[in-house]
Image (cartoon, rainbow, N blue to C red):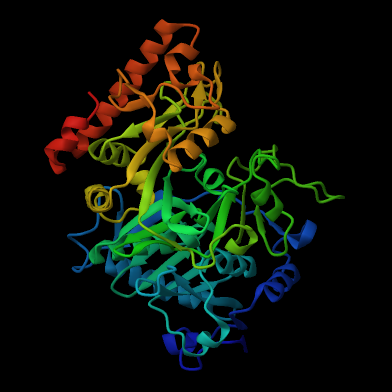
Length: 532
């Protein structure tokens, strides 16, 4: 039996997927919450939020993500970063997954990736779990209901958490699998309930398709000045650096919190919602995001809650530190209705430096910007795993290596070309530690970070006096109104100056060692900006 609204000529049967149980097409949020509750997939929380746990997997499985190696993509995929799958393995995986689906109920959402209609792709998401359907309905862009009557998909994604892959038969690594086939325009996900795999699959698609059009895909948040979309800022950053928090500025208009394209006519969001980390979420510092955790249909992932009051515990990370909430963009009061902006006037690269070495803000030349973009540095904090006694450096190129199907230089060159064409000012912002490394120092005050960003975005910071950092060569402001002067010089914040120098030398060497892999692929100006 089928129900819901769908193009009568584009049902699953028309795609060769037959023999299923009930198929629910394009259900809206109340119906999805009802279905999820009736299937005991989660709990109804305060305000109608939907509380779920994702079992064994509380984060992405990047090592289980495969790209099918066909002739059309063999020369363009970055195979060092993307595990290959044979066409035969994929065909067997698809056949077995479709067989597994027979007799089971499925939920279908017909959605759009990309706010610019010229560059958008239509995506059909087929999910075993009702709450996954709710999640992806938040995270991608929702067509007008009448447009569903003629909707056809460019790509179809099938997500079956109950399906276990066979590595020998399906040419994959484990029972968990994410397989992208660009020729068949299919993505198959099995063996994981973590909903983030759904949105990141679409992001990976766009990361591959858009560069062919000269469009820069970006793992970044973005906002623009009120009443002035031309004044756009983008915020690159890995998880935990403040990308979502800092772009949700009440004094600016939010374009989106995670994934954007930079085309010849400006910036556009890929998504229709936000996927925010909730650990230690502060109602004073982040009131709008905090408020979404008690709004109808917001998906709350892997958070501990009081069984009587349903109050969420924002500090209990016993399930995972990667606890999250997913909600539609319009739950943020200052979100852009169009999800589009102008060419970035400012580019912010966020890092969480747990070594306590980097300044809270630095201005980058275009060559330095490409260097730090290719480096994609942040830190995993010590103490999160038993036996880890010091910060663990992470270099995730382009601030999103797991989602980069092409070589990093493709994206780096696109970024440089866009900066050259449109004259963006680039900044490196450290939201990590000051006064010492993790365990000794303290986290950079968010008020100081916001004050520095405000000065950068309104243009006043560019007029400040700068000094050249002796370790990294970029420009650092000497004074900024509203920010303690000592914060701007990390070495001064350390009691033990020799310890700072040793830590700085260690981090410089890490940057240098990591960047060697890019030297054969980059131009001389970027080589000159390289830290050594």
